[in-house]
Image (cartoon, one colour):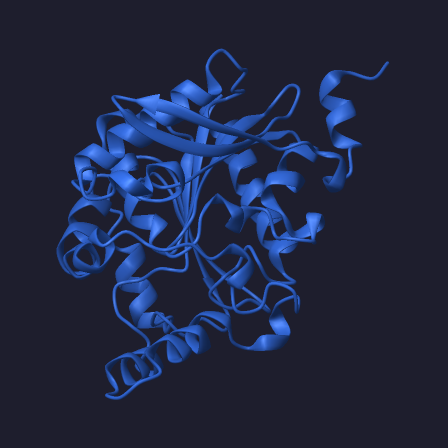
Length: 298
């Protein structure tokens, strides 16, 4: 006899349908992509980084690398949000910049999109780069105690020396230097997505002013209040953030209240872990961690 969960497991990634949703939350249109498993083990809430959207989690032309397609095929529903200030909410970016407002909007977006759909053992946050700021704030919020756990990737507390040299250098070409940091080595990515043009989106102005204070003050303060399991991933070729042993030890040490903190290095990966050739390996490893969180919760 084949159950609905079993039938999910035999679907290929390209067979997984993805729907788009726009919901109104107190006059702010919020958008997301949803890919459902029939009988989910859990729900993955995917939170993209800067200058992109939820498209980051659906690698164009490569369904096998897509979190939105791979995870439902393995029994996990995925809701990939457009962070406040991106997607449908972009025109409202200035009004929704306050951190507490963004956290409330995101929780409301998730609730409206999921509605009465099955959630399995609960929700797990998977965040990339600048999206980690929102994920940590959500986990530190009182509602975060109900999460299964969080995955943080492509972030840190201190910039890599190469990033400091490139981003503080005078003269034109800052955009080119930033792409060098975010998308090298080139051979780690499919040619069609290298450079990010296929998933690019303007970023809200608040991010530029928010990030310095986040890294210096809010990140360590809020990390200490997270009370769910944490998995922290760095790409082996990360060039935006420091990934030496001392820098990583300082990061994991911040999560003093978390019942478990797992540090992971993803081989053959650069900054954009969900867009590279190793994306499938990365996503499978995250889902393995989620499965452990499900078992621990039960």
